[in-house]
Image (tube, helix red, strand yellow):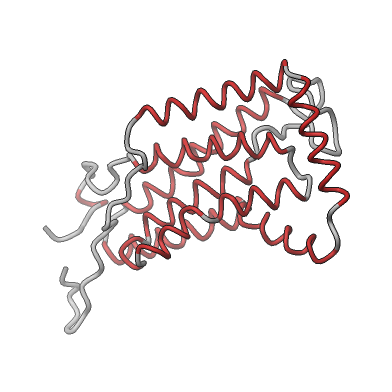
Amino acid sequence: MATGRPGARRPRPLGVPVLTPVPAGWWFDALLVAAFAALTAALAWSPPLLRLDIAVRDWCDAHRPPPVYVVMRILDGFGQGGPLTTVTVLVSGWLAWRHRTVRPIVLSGLAPIVSTLLIVGLKRWTSRGAPHHGSARMFGDGWEEYYPSGHVSNAVVYYTVLAVLLAPYLAAAPRRLLQWLPGPLAFTGATHLNYHWLTDSIGGYLLGLLIARLLLRLPWRTLPLPRRLDRRPP
């Protein structure tokens, strides 16, 4: 693509290589939905699962020396929605400017919309307390809204979007690390610090995978757009 400046570099191809869900079939998405539904139902009606959450909480409380606490705070930070949204918007804005198209912003803009609607809606519906605030039981009368974990879901969704946007600039190994490593790190930090029950984090990871797979299927590189929003040269 010529930029109108002598000697200007051609931008890397937008969104190439194209990242796709692995495994590719919709059957895995259905499996994620079924697993989340089963987990939610089990939390509502299965005392042994609640006892597991309480046992994990108590173990984490008993095994958190100061150095471990610091490390876990860092790991939990991988799921902070505000900084992740800011970084994603900045990256997509830079790519939009480089390529003269809003296509990267379409992808990065959908991530917080879909995540917020789904995660916040489920939190309010299930109304579950935190490990040290409120009840471990689902559908309580309190104000707490901790299930599923938004931190863990964020770490799956936003880093997948960043991996998609930065795919032309990253080799395969760093790209896979960017996409897949932050989720387990945030899972570990949020659970060990008892910001969430173990099953909150599991639910957040399942939903994060589902949202990420849906975003990977979005044809953002080929969506028909008005010319004023997509000024890339033919």
